[in-house]
Length: 138
Image (tube, rainbow, N blue to C red; front, side, top):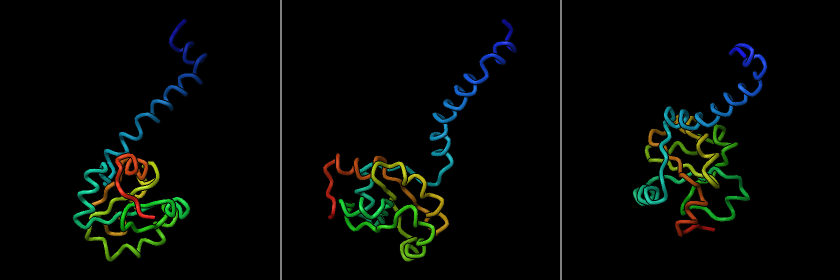
């Protein structure tokens, strides 16, 4: 069987393999070009102790279940429309977080537009914070 015949017969499998491979590589590419830096709980604690802003991007019900101390709450779905509320804090580092760290990765460009230069994403979100035994406010 020639290569052309193989490709013609199995084009769907080749397409699935290509798409799944691209999906595996995409997070690596996205992190490489993002202005948002990943940060763990220890480094986040150190930054928060030095006047960083904790930005909770979860929805209200999640936020009410416990949050990082002194966190500012703006759900990710409202971040662009409410970015002006963050203007007085744009000279400070900001640590964006959500429940498990998936949604907060998407906040980098909106925070850049809002004027933030030093932007971090809490790896693992509140789940990692809780697992590390760090305090949550109610």
